[in-house]
Image (cartoon, helix red, strand yellow):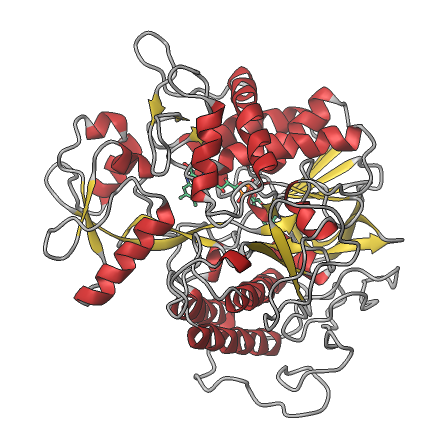
Length: 598
Ligand SMILES: Cc1cc2nc3c(=O)[nH]c(=O)nc-3n(C[C@H](O)[C@H](O)[C@H](O)COP(=O)(O)OP(=O)(O)OC[C@H]3O[C@@H](n4cnc5c(N)ncnc54)[C@H](O)[C@@H]3O)c2cc1C
């Protein structure tokens, strides 16, 4: 099946994609295809622990309080209207998920149990299996999609968007054997998750390589807030990767953070950025690579957190008696593909939701347990809009930054003023940064498998394996093996490493060192050099087609998203939310704006 008769092609099978797929097939009887690079159940979603934040009981809580907490965490960059949608529609989506069969934890009277997490002023987080919420959410949604979807493409890797006549009409992909195929549909929804794999220490699963965001960048689709990478403050300091996460809920229940001397150094219930940055400062000052989480005072640890308790015991730690070594780990990509309030991107026919999207909900930092909720709310909203015949984006949510840009940023910045077509009065200003990639061709390369109208290409990952070499400005680069002319040496002095796994690891180290919890202009420049090396080495590893192509494509996607992170983080000469610059420790009023890459 080539998917030509699909109403909707969903890319990815986490909470956002599956929620959308179920809504489209069950409620609107659309022909839906779900294309995902692993098994259907493979996603960051299934690793989610703490739960879903939603106001299910309004006394003493309220959606206004949830909204206020979310805005506070977002450090001035949330779109209040998007947050309003999230908090108002969230409870209904949770009820629907329960009706679909998701079993959340309840007390002896059958009432939903609520946990409190960092940044929330009240307990409002529903959970399942103690701290195995994502697995239950994913289980319920996978079962529903298996019943209703017209086509499920497991182990298919989306490479690039197909764009014809100014409209997205599907994707080019690799099938499980590495063969190049096209999957066409009237609409495509990017729900490919975040890019935690940009960093050496992360809680995100191996598939979190920012593929959808990279595809959008290459197609010239607007991406924003990408510099805001949330680092979770309590990842277990242990050699396994992704790092086991010690849920926020532990601190919500009273676990304390202690430095190398056993002293407390931060209010544990502050938002994640505050706690991660405090940990990093302590670790640097004391010359250590972790701090301690003291959960010895928590009652009924094993009953409340059976998954975490089992995980700790498997590495020889007893939370009743041992302090637990923790350090920050990359955890959540706050920015992504810019959408309006119904998930429309700047490219007609292309929609986005979940961690891959920038709806305006998270601003400069995500509030704990708002992301499962975001996927559940905004995935189905895109479906409703498709059903209603919406064609292009409206200036709402984060899309305001594209369609209704504020006046340009201050002179001397690296921005280029408001985006074309800007008008109106948004709540948050915007500035355009030109994303040219690190040698990837942006815009039409004509590099499709069959010579049809140009795709957004390319990662260098053309389906015919030729590799793209044209630069954004039409030139070719000297720093890539296949590039014509100029110097062909490697752009970075570090030793060349073999194989995709080693190249990816080197890229991750460069990003962790240069674009991690705390950044500087110099460290970001260093990170960019690491990205260039990774790109050079990945292209040298061979033409990205056939078996093994996915590993190379993922590196090239990480390079593209990493370059976007570095560009935006360099331009943001302030500290705000999850973005911290040593030379600019305070937020600046004139930078209370969304940096848009296109
Ligand atoms: C350890 C951990 C704990 C967390 N705990 C919580 C929590 O308690 N509460 C909360 O709200 N959030 C939590 N989060 C965050 C939350 O899990 C994610 O933000 C959310 O699940 C993202 O959902 P999504 O549908 O957008 O993407 P994902 O769940 O990441 O799904 C993305 C999908 O896209 C597929 N994909 C990616 N690239 C391609 C490609 N090129 N081609 C085809 N398919 C592709 C992937 O295989 C996957 O199926 C946690 C995250 C982690 C890592």
